[in-house]
Amino acid sequence: MRSEYYYVPQPSQLPAHLHNTAWVADRSLAFLKRRDRSRSFLLWSSFIKPHPPFESPTPWNKLYRCSQMPAPFIPSGSDDLLTYWNRVQNRYKYHDAGRDEFLDRTRIAAYYGCVSFIDSQVGRILAALGPEADNTLILYSSDHGELLGDYGSVGKRCMLDAACRVPMLARWPGQLPSGRTIDAPRNLIDFFPTVLQAAGATDYREHEAGESLLDVAAGKVKRTTTFSQYLQRGYALQMAATRDAK
Image (tube, rainbow, N blue to C red):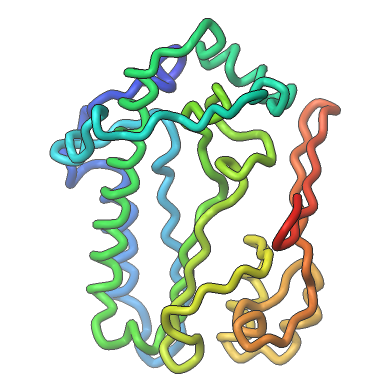
């Protein structure tokens, strides 16, 4: 349920095999089974979770216990860091009348359960690739983070790390180094030229919106800043981030 239940953790009304998280994996597996194995392929598996409402089917809704969850990060002066849109979200998502730390921790536990359920489905997809996984470029990321009570707020719509710093993983044995962490500022728009280069396109560098992660790993790019923006109803947020500053 959404509306006033949007940020209230709740069990799914569906069994695990009928949940939308499992459905995305099922459709991905169906594509891998019927694809033309003589050609390269592009598969985009897009999970809506862990977007709220934070609901998972049994047993994923009980995987994490609220008493073992960390409290939200609320440093001194947090309120001064919230944007206009944070305050709007807190109001219409019923989060502006005070905090309940038990609910905060329960919400975090429910969020982690959603993430772990996704991880299990990603595992199904990788297992279906079998040995071909080592000849496949695999990219994993998210469109945004979630404040989960950090700074006394919920949602996103700000440039705080909890909202805009997302995971970005890439795997391609023989083409990308294993186990390496690169701290260069990157953006989701880098996925497009990365896929073009992997597919053999020679003009992938002409797409100025992003840079190939393959080139980033090889040290062939010079961009040191990444940008982000949010605009709605005349109110805008912009960010420029480097390794050391934002």
